[in-house]
Image (cartoon, rainbow, N blue to C red; front, side, top):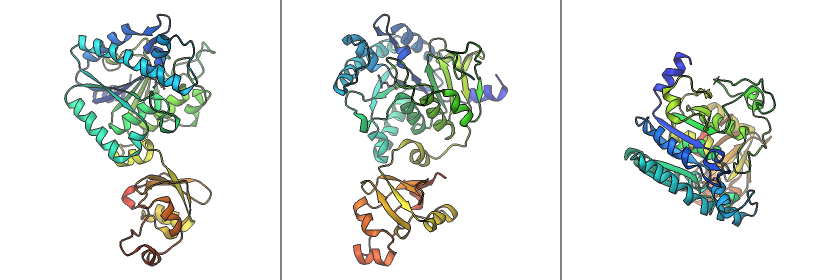
Length: 379
Ligand code: GLU
């Protein structure tokens, strides 16, 4: 381990730890892996100077086992039922294991809606900060028993990167059932070598993840590709990431044992402000605005607000206050921001100058669609 790597680990305070279903659910014993969670609690007790937030998977897997399913059900109410039964099993084990170490835990169940609205997002941030200040460990999962496809974050790799971003974490620790990132598929090529340090996630690194559509195992959701995507989002916002095998590595060893096996991903960019992180990575836009070349130039060169005069068309339905993408005429994503107008009103204002807007809607109507402070350039 290099000196920089060591120093980086020393300075880490807030850690988001994501644990995959394969580790949490013991399919041989048909139950939640109590031994692992007990070891986890004891390990976290050793690093009490860090703030730990856990993103747990395993609810659907634990429920499946309890209810006698051999495979993940594809029918949504069945999956939701498994999650409902499994989540409580899982939390029961967490709560007892951490209580044995005198640590209090709290359950937080989220859906994509909680990230989409800035107010909800801020409330959530405040609540989790309060938990951390009281030394309570938040244990977060997707609210799988109510979340259907359109309001889902998707998989817990994405959920953990969203959580790391909204909590401004220093490190995202991903515990999976592989030792880290390899230069080839270790399941096929026994000579594949582990990559201990990655300082930039470019195309060549992404290509090591194999099939972008790989969906993990019978109980887990994301494959290596979804992990690398999650890691890419956090490192580009100034948070480090570590990918390790949760069957062999525990959180305290990442900080206290230099020989810990895994792949460390150095943050490749400076910290983004909370607002920019939210706009860029976390929230999901409701629609898009297609803007002409002059409008795009103004955004890029003079960092100005987006005015109706440059807007050519409006895609999808959205309300005032929603997040929208800004596209150029060829459909390339250029920026993202919070719109002051809903989609219906905006359709009446396309290409209009300020005096025309005021004639239509009155003098109080905002002249800009996205104010420059609510806009982030992506290209
Ligand atoms: N939220 C799901 C569960 O608890 C897991 C999703 C995932 O592993 O990505 O079962």
